[in-house]
Amino acid sequence: MHTVRSHEKIPDESYRKMVLTLMDRQAGREIATAEVFGQCVIHAPSVDDKIRITRYQNEELKHFKLIAKLMAELGVDIDAYVRNRQKAGARFTGDEADIGVEDWIDATLFNFMIDRAATFQLGEYIKGSYLPLARANEAIVKDEEGHKSFGEVCLVAMCRDEATRAEIQRRFKKWFVAAMRIFGRPGTPGNRYCIEAGLKTRDSGEVAAAYLDSIRPVMAQCGLHFPAGGELGVELAPQTDLSMSPSGARATVSAGRTG
Ligand SMILES: [Fe+2]
Ligand SMILES: [Fe+2]
Image (cartoon, rainbow, N blue to C red; front, side, top):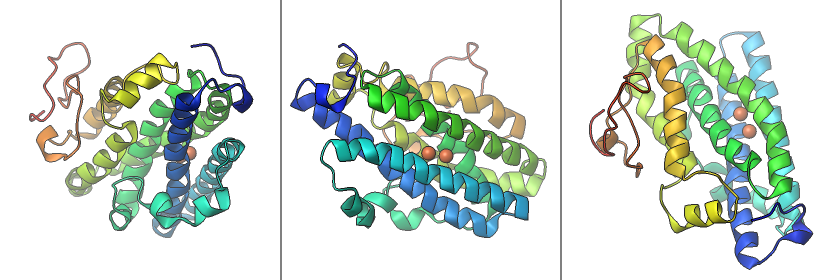
């Protein structure tokens, strides 16, 4: 599939529908992330941290606007989209009530895991055939790199305290599941279509595996481990590796088994 340079050059209805689906998912998450950052501000331990989080929140809303502009070109009523709480709020766990940030531990786990998952997912769109979406995400990913680094620094610092580390491990699953949901189910017809149409380069399972490889060393440094696959309640690709062995030296475990 050749590069599609603008919405006027969209080749057919299937392509149009899939581009809209990808943008709908991303836009929903951008606005939901801004809302979650609103909760994080309450728990940020210092004024500098509060300023930083409000800057991130502002950036997420700008990300939303970049994608919303492309959706509007394809006929989406953005004002109605923003008003629809079902779309805006329930993007991470499927249950809006469940993305509550209770304290700075939740805020840090959110920042460490969700922004990094977004970076991997949006990296696929940058390489994708729909040029307006690729261009928008080049700008977005630059911001996300900063967000995820902050999450990592906070996580490493907090895990030096044994009791805090135990609490972080206890809560890890909730935020991990939310991060894995960003990639979507592996091996679906939608994934196959996206690869054929050049909208993505890899199946969701492969993107998720690359994400896990990137958080594994940080978790090892923190003394954390992945939850068992069977406990997660999300469909994992066969190549999903929830072990803590460094990449290359491990055997792939099948999805659903303890890592
Ligand atoms: Fe974002
Ligand atoms: Fe972000």
